Length: 594
Image 1 (spheres, rainbow, N blue to C red):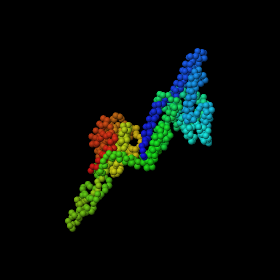
Image 2: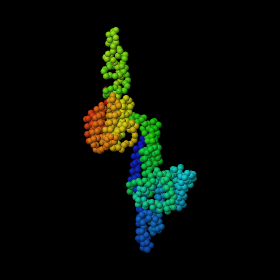
Image 3: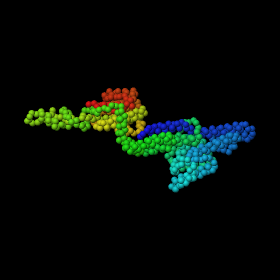
Image 4: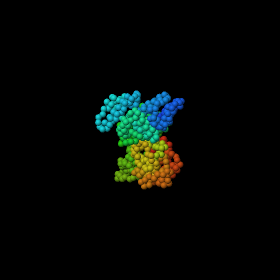
């Protein structure tokens, strides 16, 4: 793939930043605050004008204004038939009513409201007819009856600037808007919700739209039950916004939530194809859409190459993919290392099949290998007297010399407890494990590597498990179980040079009690004692222990000092970024000793 582009994590981080900005600016009670502020300004202006008028009518008007309800819907309802004495106050009230109609209509139908040039009685009547036909069409479809969507669009297409091509596309746009409005209502306090709902119902009733809007809301709720109808949200903004702008923000929040869920892919059947490019374009712009398309291409290329496969909706690494990933990690390691010559491990016995060198060597007691028959008989003939029978003695025997090749068995124990990703060690440890696996599989095929992960329990891992996304939110560092499992696996290789490599960032905090794991922080003495006993048992069976500490807490250092003293093992305090280099270098170096 040519060029630079963002990965899923980077896109999710940008999405989270935008969502946080949206919530920081969102003032849920803003629409009510803005309406109350406008009404207070209108009433103050009217009262000022009345105070300069000395007649009975002015006093009656002041009394009427003093008895207005405290809530905005009540004031709007009472003032609808009131004729203001102050011309500017009357003009401001008329403008407020016009604005409320536009805002409430836009809160329910953003795209359709944009298609209305005015709110004349004729335009509102046509809009009401459109809603009635739309409701009839939805209900006909639900009953399985035919409906004429094309004819509907020919008559009312000017209400829909987005030009939906199907009924489903049109309804989804409307449902998203109404679901966002329902979330706004659910996010308010009961008093605020009742006030805003009363205001909306009053305005809709004045426009003679209330019945069809309620009918449409019920139809859309049934058709799109997966939308977050009535799911509360929160905002921290202080600046009031108009109602339609607030619903716009709630709709964008839904986009953020849906995109984040699709990008996480933590649901059955998830795929990058689920990411809505239009929603991504609305929230993060065209560059994010281009990045997503590149990522989809990568996913398809990896699937075609057999490196990843989808199982039950999850993208998983294949064994071939794990091997390739390990090879890449190993290349990164060897960029910093000099190439080591191939050698052998320290071992008591020879291991796998050896290649003949073409030479022979004298046999010594305890040697085993392929007998050099011709050389052995030749030695007996040369030693014997002429004419005497040829008899073989031990000094006559020679073996075919072969490249000495020894076998190593390694158990790599990886700490999978929650502290590893929390402290940033997890990725480096997994890359080291993949690199070591690739090294052994590629250069030392007769060696054996066991991967063991441990947290509250220990268990075998496969290379592809190391490439799985995410981590366990598990507390507990059960080294005792890890040592126990390593001992069982390494016991299958009695003639090999056996070693344990353990990578951890904490002291043992868990041990087995029957089939259950006992956890305690700080660790109890029983956990320490059982863990050390299991390590000593490993050492006595001839297993070398190599421990790499990624932290240097007092408790961990104290435990490791006791472990090294009791097992004659090696303990290293290691920077996690150098972990892969050091482990691979150490493995190659020890294999080179004879």
